[in-house]
Length: 122
Image (tube, rainbow, N blue to C red; front, side, top):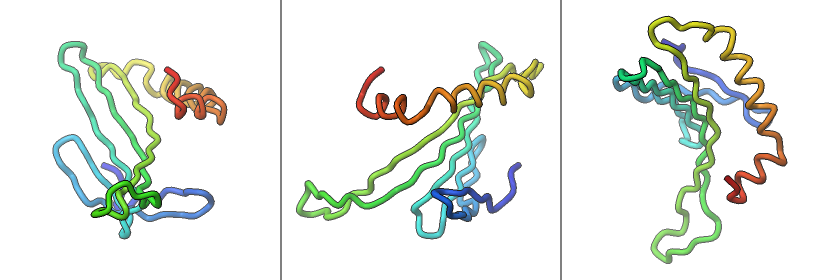
C-alpha cells in the first residue's frame, strides 16, 4: 500500500494528496480543495492472467465559458495517466521492462504528439 498522503509536483509546486477512498482494488487521493486527484486501480484479467494497473493524475478547474445559464462553472477535467500491464503469476521481467516502457512512452508523448492527440488524431 502506498503512503498516505502522497505528494506530486505540478508546474514547480508540490501538492499533498491524502487518501480519500480505498475500495477493493482502487485508491483515490485528492487535495483538500479538490483540484488535484490521483487514482490507482488494479484490473486483474483472470483469462489472460495479466494484471493492469492504472495510475491517473487529474486536475479539475472551472469552465470560464458557461453554456448553461443555470450552471456558471461546470468542472473541466484534464488527466494524464499510464497503465502498467504484467503477468500476474510470474511478474516476469516486469521490473526491467516497466521502467523502459515508461521512459519510451513519456519520450513519445512530447508536446507535438500530445497536441496531435488533443486535436483528435488517432
